[in-house]
Length: 149
Image (cartoon, rainbow, N blue to C red; front, side, top):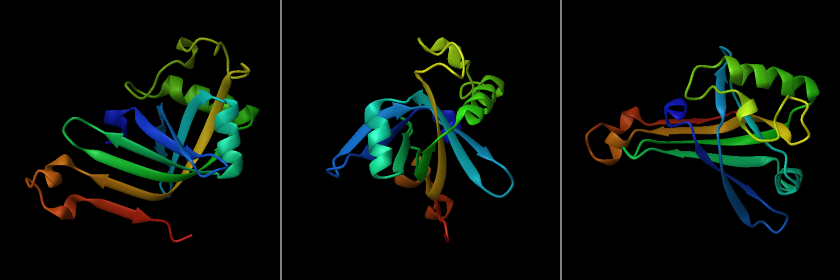
């Protein structure tokens, strides 16, 4: 569902516990055991400060059909090697999730100063098909997963 919706609202909190939202474009990877999200994003002072204060964020997807999914995650900035790997991951992924990061002004390479990568490690996932909200499907199709760690 996340890869079909593509764009999500991501919220962090500042040192005064005030939320701040922005729209981001995560790519989710299942390695057979875990789901990990990757985001190519500007490493702005606000994002860096928010994640320094609290390394947790919330990703919320919504589609006009009322399909929604949420990933509550621990986030960390990627190092130079990770930035190169994630750059290639986005270039190789099929659309609409995959894209060339070069389309973003200032991102001419993975080492560009404006280019940053976030690793998202979910501790809670929720997938809620819009048909459930509209009474057209049973609630058994709602996925709620919480990490045991």
